[in-house]
Every structure is written in C-alpha cells, then in structure tokens.
Length: 337
Image 1 (spheres, helix red, strand yellow):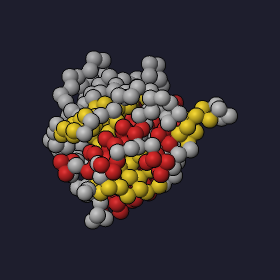
Image 2 (cartoon, one colour):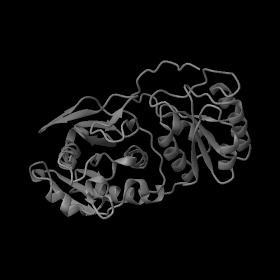
Image 3 (spheres, helix red, strand yellow):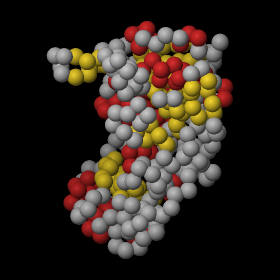
C-alpha cells in the first residue's frame, strides 16, 4: 500500500467556534482532524507530522521555507510516496507556489484545507483531506510538483487563485487548465503539469512590497515603500498601465537598485508592453521593470522574494518571473487601456 505523509499546520480545518472569543479559533491538532476523517486507511497508509495550528494569514516566507524543509525530508524518505500539507486557505495560492518553486523531487505535494470548520454542519475538511491523500498517493501525479486540492479539483500551484472569500469551489486556475478532478474514489488526471519554475534557495527576502495601482494614484506610496523594500511589485491596471506619477516613482526606486516587477491587478491575463503612453507597460519596461508573465501580484511577491534570497541578478529574475517556455498558459487577449 502506498504511504503518504500528512503535514498539519493549522487553518480553518483545525478551528472550532468559540462563543467566548466570538468566532472561530484554532483547536484541533492533526490527530483530531484524522479522527474526523473516516476512510483514509482505505486510500493510503499515513505518516502524520504535526507542526501546530497557525492561521495562514500569520505565515512568513521564512516559516514557509522551514515547512518546505519538512516537506523535502518527507519526500526523501524512501517509504513515502507523496506528501499532503494541511493549512489555512487564506494564503494557499502563495504557500503552494513558494513550495512549488523550491521543491524539485518527483513525489507529489498536495496542499489542502477547508472552507468551513468542524463546528459547521457542512464541514468540508474530511472530503478535502481524503481527496488530497488520494492525489498524493497516485503514481500518475509523480513529477507534477505542488498542486492544490479542494472541492474535487486539482489545480497547479503556479496558476491557482482564491476567487471567492467563502465559496467551497473558490480555488480555480484562470490562466491554465486544471490538472484533473477527484470524484468519489475516482481520480482523473486531465493533463501533465509540464515545465515549472524553480529556484534553488533556502533563503527569502521578506522586504518585498506589493502595491495595487488605482485611479488617481500618485507616487507617494511607492516612494514610501522604496525607503525599506528590496523589491517592489506593482499590480497595474489592465495590461500593465499606471499613472505617469507612479512610473516616475518606480523609476526613482529602480535608480536606487530596487528590483521592480510589473504585474496586472486583473485576476487573469498578463502585464505587457502593449501601451506606450507615460505609465503604460512599454514605458515601465523601458525604465527597467520586470514583466511578471501570468503570475498574480501575490505570487510575484513570492517569486521575487525567493529570487532575491537566492542572489539572482536582474536577467535571472526576469526569466524566473516570466516562467519556462512551454508551460500551460491559456492565450489571453490584450487588455484595453
């Protein structure tokens, strides 16, 4: 029988409603979550690793690198066929992507959690955990890197985003096809993962700012970020456009040696050099900014933080952010200005 390591870190799946606190609080350890999930022994043998009960919104990149070390050690165990990480859903699109960047072994890693607590009648934790173990145990998922499994879909870590604050099916990949589905006892793999980004590092730069461009935004916020940040991600409007004042501030930051990445604030698509008015993507590119490919702003911050931690130069950072040739990305039309 296949064996799967399950790493528990906390999140909604570990929470119960506390009437004194007035809301959901961490309470269940890994053993308690397993006890609430019947049928796991029919899917795979398990090795449980309990790392506490941390809300996902409390994670730092440094802590995620430490958890990444735990995942790697589990992968290196010859008795382990796959790894599941159980965590809060608030930051799965960032955490899964970070681990996808730093891990390069063939054993599949699946990240899951729950949108409801065990205090709720519609608690989804047990189903998600069973599905995640099934995916991690499958030989068909070897070499697929890190994926996210909730509500029956298997999503690649580099494109999955949380599309809704509380819906069960919130996790979707808008710029690439999903990897497959889990329906009851059946696992259907719909495509291979294909080429992935990778950065060899055990360090990350936490001082990376993420700014979202808005109507009428000038350069003051970016100037403020430049006082402390080693990298700045600008989530621009449309296909990569901002005010001229924001571009001027970005140019000043780049003149100080700060790496600036231009992404789109849209949930899908990519920043581009399609527009050449002051503040358009072409002018950011000419000023020295890095175009982010199809990565979201939060994912750009993860990649930039790891790339800076690895000591990558400007050209290597640009290659990392753009992604490998041949990766599965849906064709996206240019945005309107």
